[in-house]
Amino acid sequence: METSKRILRVDRREINYLRVTIESYDGMGVVKTIDPHEALIEVRVASGCEQLFSELARSLKQDEGVSLIDITGSV
Image (cartoon, rainbow, N blue to C red; front, top):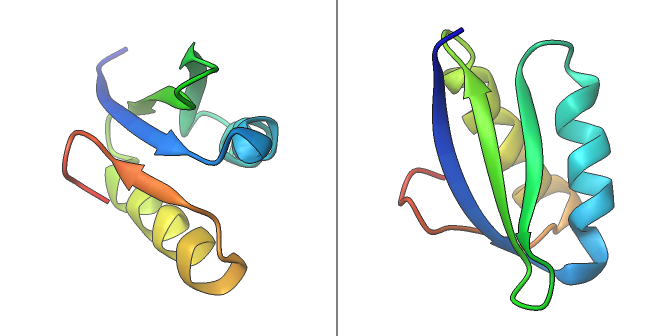
C-alpha cells in the first residue's frame, strides 16, 4: 500500500492519545514514535486519506487544543 509520511512534533503527554485517535480511523494511518524525548512522531497516511488526516489534525488543534507542529509542513 502506498503511504505518505508526516513528521509531527507534539506535546509528549499527547503521544498516546494521538496514536489511539489516528489509528482508530481504520486504515487511515499508522503512528510511530521517532523520538519520545523530542516528542517527534511519524504518521504514515494511507493513499487517499490525506484530506481526512488533514481535517482530523486541524480539528484536534482547533477544537481540542492539541499541539501539533508538522515538520513536513503540511498540517
